[in-house]
Length: 173
Image (cartoon, rainbow, N blue to C red; front, side, top):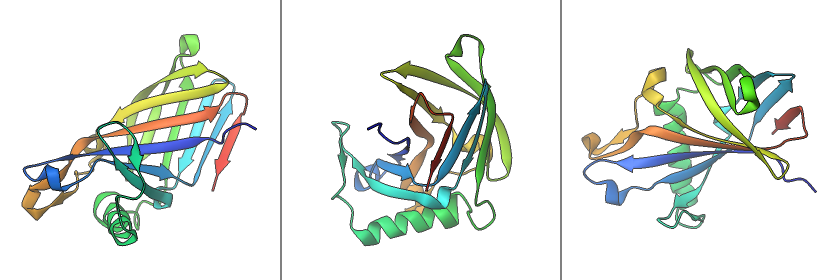
């Protein structure tokens, strides 16, 4: 059986008291991506983000490091203070596969702002994989801050996508 498509989002701690914070992995549980020839479109519902756990130095994700209360608080901060989901419940992508098939070129719309984006893709083992570093401030998204900035997130988010290569439409959630 083919593994389902996944979208993971990684956040990175920063600030004077960063040792008290965590690098996190989140999973997006509701999205739709459609490939029609070279054209790619995507719809993403960030309210479906789930906090998987803490990314350890080894790169492994510790799913037991956070309590349910911690996960709920993180999700509420993302919704209310970072992505403003009451005003912007959906993100979108429109693009096309570039010459040679190794890059998807397009525009990602988050919090009402569209920004050009090139996403390198890799095809291997029957999967399409992409890893793209986003700078949220390009969309006007300020990094989350707590304790007067002593704990904050870096202005960098890594998004990893992993999809079956033989499918033209992926709907999750």
